[in-house]
Amino acid sequence: MDIDDLPSKKPVMVIGENLEAISVAELEQRVGALESEIARLRAEIAKKQASKAAAASFFRN
Image 1 (tube, rainbow, N blue to C red):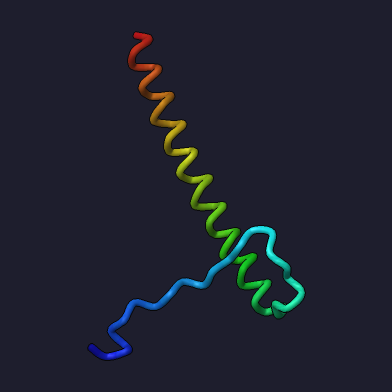
Image 2 (cartoon, rainbow, N blue to C red):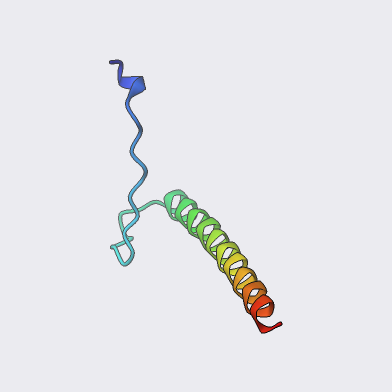
């Protein structure tokens, strides 16, 4: 097996960790990753709420 065949590790972000040793570029990258994840979570919440509302409407009739 070649080293290139091994799965790459995802960068680890720990909520509340000390940020003093992290560069501005890394901090900006983390902010972008977190904003993307927040958008993804909000979209999933909206999808589930719409599904729940559709089911509630169906069973009310």
